[in-house]
Image (cartoon, rainbow, N blue to C red; front, side):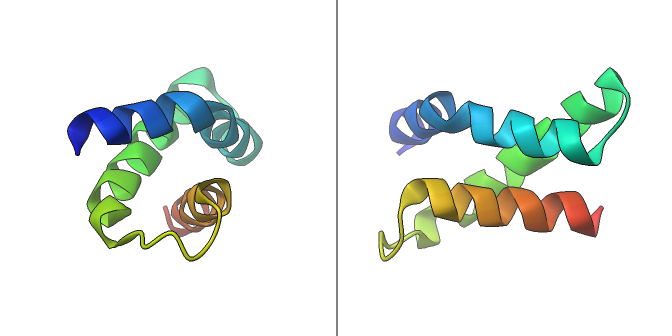
Length: 69
């Protein structure tokens, strides 16, 4: 599961960077938000059932994380 997750993060990291860059001003804060989003994705990944596109799922979790913290 870890290799599969890492591939997903690699393939869709642009979405995560985009959210981090929009919601945080400093480079350090953007990096912290990126890490937090990846952590939240990791926690939620076992529950992803494929009922939506993975990109939509990543975007929603990234956005919710950026807004929440």
